[in-house]
Length: 535
Figure 1 (tube, rainbow, N blue to C red):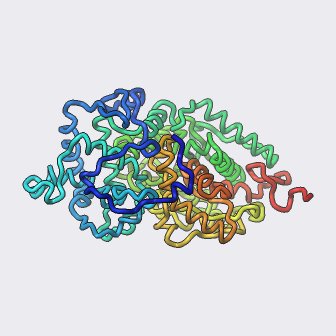
Figure 2: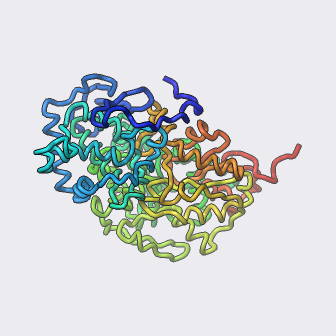
Figure 3: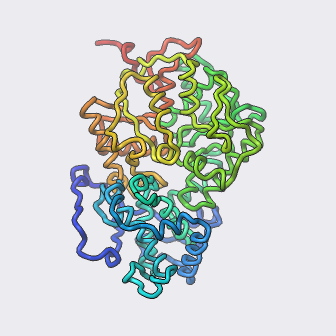
């Protein structure tokens, strides 16, 4: 089924349903749900209940004791995560979050209001884990866990990108993303999760990256990007792979190595490191900074995060430098210390060029590339020609995980303002902590989910359209590989005049490398303004 046209999708019905939310069944309409996990992925990850099933089926093939498994799993997590119990008990339904979710704004479905999405789990909690619920049941908001509830969970917990925008507005600090994460974990206990997500995690187990590229193919891809750089600049770059004793291990998301426009961002990384003479190495075994495990369970998140640190220890580096990625940074910044760390075998990151220490990375021993580059620019360590990006009028999308979850707000902007001359912000209530999600995060960037992706991304696209119409913006920058993968489709649908770019692609364009040949094109092969032939 094809995705409706933009003018059709923009007609959103916000009217109140005629039935109460507990009595409103889920409509598994094509384009609004994700394919279920396949047996191969379940077996590769040792997940329970491997079988072929589809959310469109009446019978999902649940194990006989599915209800016992779910309730026992919920009990275990209530005991383990104090935050979950607080989130279950403190909501007063004030409505502050109701209109803050991009999926509610794009669909008009009340169950996509964060307060009601949380209620999907909270109602079962009340029924089975509170005295009032056990006695009064539905009267106090409790409901029995049924197979229809399980289907409802799958439908709506996989219509949440875990972006955490709602948490910014909640006066009690309830984080619906954490509730979604627990909901997905509980579903996984009975073999219910998304194929797109688990296939990517399984690939990470098998090959070290989400895309499933073998180590030799990873090396070949990096070599091809180096050849492109040589054609552009005349500079020969030969990065080391799996080299023991390097000072820094650089880990980027695999999307930056294998797919445009991320490849241009990776070229920017390589050019920067070459110009600095940085003592770094890449790993063909930990060739993925992203962490799709965070969309499955805390345990899966922990496993994928650990491989980066295991490789850093094996190679004997001092610290880790990470590329432009979203969920990699949320996991490292929020969960690393309690899951896999502290990484005592590494050193606190110190820039070898400026001597700057980064105390916030003292425990994780991992630094974000924009922090590293912003510090270089501040200390005048780079020769830059911003005019090389003059063919772009740029705005910046605060990717949810590095911005809201990590507080990485000013460093990317500082870089953009130093490598370009035409930067324009989107409206204040759509950026920084209040940024709108791309609409395809948390592993929801599958083709079969396209209608909801376009609906969920509509608020972000509206803000981009605003600066396009007002300032002529033609380029949307970001520091997340997932965004670079999904935003081009979103822009092509809602604002086709705008393309997508990584911050370090802009750095690569502006970077004046010692001994380079005269550059007439940018990293994409497009003419630099002022060098094109005038007709």
